Image 1 (tube, rainbow, N blue to C red):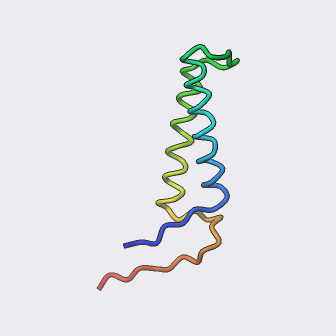
Image 2 (image 1 turned 45 degrees about the vertical axis):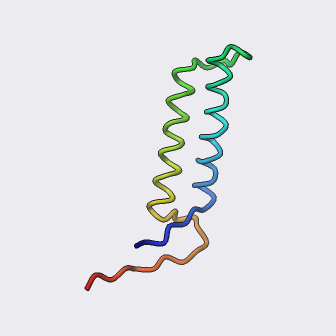
Length: 73
């Protein structure tokens, strides 16, 4: 089992996912106008979410926690 951690890059990506997802919902529901199309906003939100997940799973290099090598015997 690996010890996953997330650093500033991962948190920035996660925040981008949350904000862009909310903007996507606002645009689709017609609550307010957003200058970027809903399709582009949704695609960028998905990419930000994938990036946050990959930074967490891949041990974000900006994390302050030390990375331990795993042994397989």
